[in-house]
Length: 421
Image 1 (cartoon, one colour):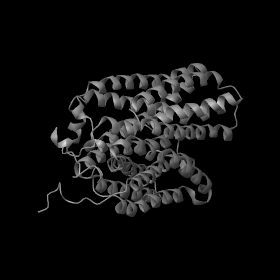
Image 2 (tube, one colour):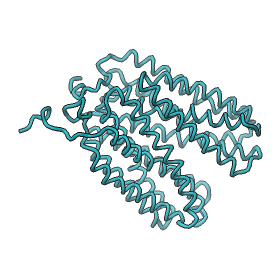
Image 3 (spheres, rainbow, N blue to C red):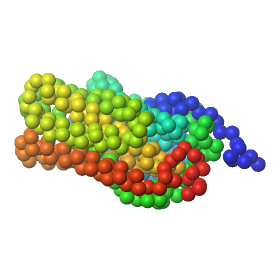
Image 4 (cartoon, helix red, strand yellow):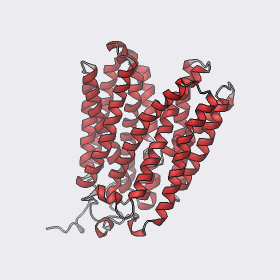
């Protein structure tokens, strides 16, 4: 019988795994924005009121939150490649089935199950990407991998906008499902069962108790603060992406030009995430993320002052806010890798995705209330900056707490560390 420590583990090229992760994240980003584009077509065909369309969005986000948590836990317990393949199969199959939905209730149910797969895929591919990379490169690698999400949102959104007039909303769902299913053989070929990378691991790394490991060793407060940070960050990001174009339209800007604000925010976020990946590859991700949130919050307040300005100051502010706030959001996977041992990467990412999805639901709701309250733009954006400031404060507390955690619970890249605790 082969000793598991001496047994050979199939070699994996970390760059190939990271590129595969980038593609999976692109599918997730594409799916997230795809529904925003085709929702008017669905509402028109079925004569749906706005609250029903909102429920359709919520069902997808809720499914992703549940999937990220449950499948993330299962991935750390039973194997990440296995759960990633299951996640992609769920996402692809049920997105395809959405094209044949006969009623709003059917579509909601199908979107919820597809969301389970999408959330689970993001959790598992982040863990696989992190563990395939060298320990010194993990934070930077997963941050760059996560760039696939905003890239997929922009590229997929542009493709959807260009084709939905002749494909229809059912055709768009078909295309999204096919894209997810195409990744199945790619993932099956380029990834191996969960291991911490052949250059720095000898045995597969799994946790028999991922939830307990996530909160043991003094990590309970850390996990609470981390989830609070992610919730507040995503709340701010989705408030901005959802409502800045609407606010600009209310100030008199043409809808076509106002829509470019969402593109500017996301483009800023892509650049911010890329810059952040080089910084956190050399040091802890906490200080640069805190800095981004504080300065970004100040610029949100300033945006309220210049929102009526038709000059370049407003456009530059929108882009820079995206660079800092959405860019900081891109550092979330690196924070998971930095703060938790490799045996619970998927569980940590899953919990962060669930917290973020909750923020993505609450943010637009709060934005709708603030816009309808007619508070004035300066006061509205000052209030919108509070969650970003709060996230920075929570992350500062997280940094202080991290220094108090015993060194042995930090991940060193040693695959046996989890079994020694």
